[in-house]
Image (cartoon, rainbow, N blue to C red; front, side):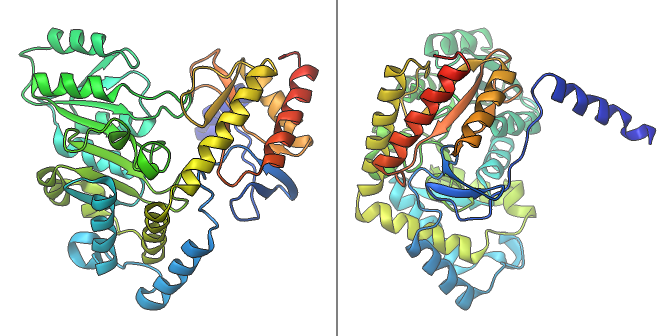
Length: 392
């Protein structure tokens, strides 16, 4: 049919350029080892930082919640979907984050889409890091506000952009990722906070990849920089280090109250399911009891990154467990990913538009669930593949 022809042409072009995404299928729980496309492989690409996605405490909490509350919430939060377990989670998030208040959304993506348009509109401006996540970009677009981008992690350029836009807006928002998911670098939030305060501008940080990773016991980037009460909005997710699903926003109590009145996913989409909420609470319980999982994550990451660099791989400038294996062209990244999979290593290629053209890579996601022998096996197979393909 003619109305589909353009899509088929675009799909063919993606395949020709090595940019077509081959979506593999899992038939096992998230863990250090997975069954993928019927094959047992070592997992190096999930966001399950702390290994909690299959943790017995979280599964037990989810089962108990089903018995108490059922499977679904049955409504949006503002009509009949707010259960006491939702309020308990939000109270726990605020306490864990050492923030005034918190609100939950259905996902981290929804948290950005709900928060940004509620804070700024057509007469306003958003100062956004040029490498911000797609959910931030989409939230900015939905707001209708003018988007003024500043150079990646460059506070001086942000100052310049703010000055250039002086007097052209009613309200303003500075927004950045906390940990940038493709490169693993950390936003200079301390400097951004100083700039925001000096210019009386709202400051928001999306800490999706900092939750459970940075800060004392995984409390995130605000805790990492000791900026409690000084960052207006901290947006996050339960889908990565917490191993569940859902979004959260913590920070100033007035902002949280406003989001409950104007955050569109909160108003127009059903609440988080009770078992998910219960599992998230169980995850917070574990992090509050001990730093064991966070410590193991960082120990594993340092070991893997140090040895990958010794083996001759370009691992970029990551400051976190995210380890990009920089390869350049998408076909090479796809070829290496396939070769690794054939040899028992699950590590997916990432190319344009997720990263710029010429910046294709395999992004390795280290987990607290990995054992020493897992890391050694991964290092061995990466070295073999890298030599075979002329990468090292």
